[in-house]
Length: 157
Image (cartoon, rainbow, N blue to C red; front, side, top):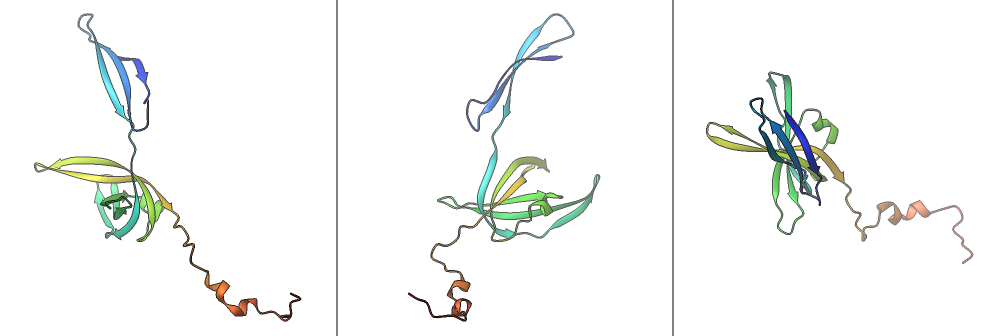
C-alpha cells in the first residue's frame, strides 16, 4: 500500500512533477519513502507538411486499424524533416494536406523487435496554421476594370 505524502507541481514550463510516496510492507513495520517523477513536457513541432505517405490498414486483435504517416519540415534555422503518424479517427479529424502549415503535438514511443529498437512519433493533436497573406499581392477582382464600370461614369470631382 502506498500513500502520497507530497506532490510538488512543476515550477516552470517543461519541468517535472515531484511525487513523494510512503510505502509499507506487510512484514514488520518497515516504511520506505520513494520518489517519483511525472514528466509534463509537451512535445510539438511546427512546420509545413511536405509529404503524405500511403494510408496503411490492417486487422488486429481489436479490429480494423488505419495509420497515415506525414512528413513535416520545421521552420527552424536548420530545417528538420520528421515523419509522424496519425491513427484511426484522428486521420479524418485533422484532415492534413500537403502544403498545410501545422502545429503537431505528439508522443514518442519505442519498442523492441528482434533485438532492434524502433521509435514512433504518434501525433495526438494537429492544428492547421493560417498562411499569412502576401502584402504585395492585389486580389484579381480589384484589377478588373469592368467590375467598376457603372451607368454613370461622370463624377463631379
